[in-house]
Length: 281
Image (cartoon, rainbow, N blue to C red):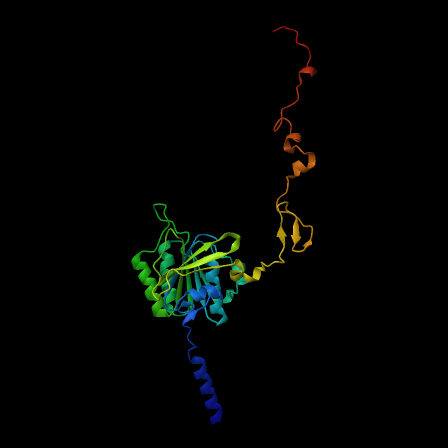
């Protein structure tokens, strides 16, 4: 019985022991991780992902969250714009059961919620989406210096990575700032615009496949030519196009004007069917 009790005590100690610490959180995109001095997004700090819409900032944040979930950690997402799409997040590796989504309406409430979540220490990564905050003057609402310091202090106290999603018109004051830009169909670029650990000004350009490997944008993917006919690389295959004529043009070649006289085309003259005028008033 003494051996059994000793084993039980040992198991309780192992369960209560803290898990291994993570100094950084990797995004899974090697080129981006290599830009950062520590080889990833540092925990205990606030880091800004700044870029226009469709620049990859949200997808990069989701990849960081997915990296934390692979370590069986919890994350939180303060979704101010209410634009987080769970199926897209799951396709990037996010475990939705380990993601807490908070949707405050007011800008100050978003900041307050992020501070509380980060300070609690329960979450490895807390994402704050500030991309659509609009102030009273119609300008993008941005963090004040005291708010930025509160977020940095909360990240340090909780050992949490605070990711700030911002636009170029309203940047924040994180420990590091990554500027993301779309480069058309060729890919996207990431520049280390701000960092206390050095490396400011370094920039990489990567194809979209590195950010979205699940999409399968390779040489054999289905493409569309200018006529809207689908074809595979090396072999033609008929398929529906994106651009189609309206049904009216297909029916008679002249659109709705041949369908609705009196509304879209002039009515035929009825004078010949009227009785001749007698001239009497």
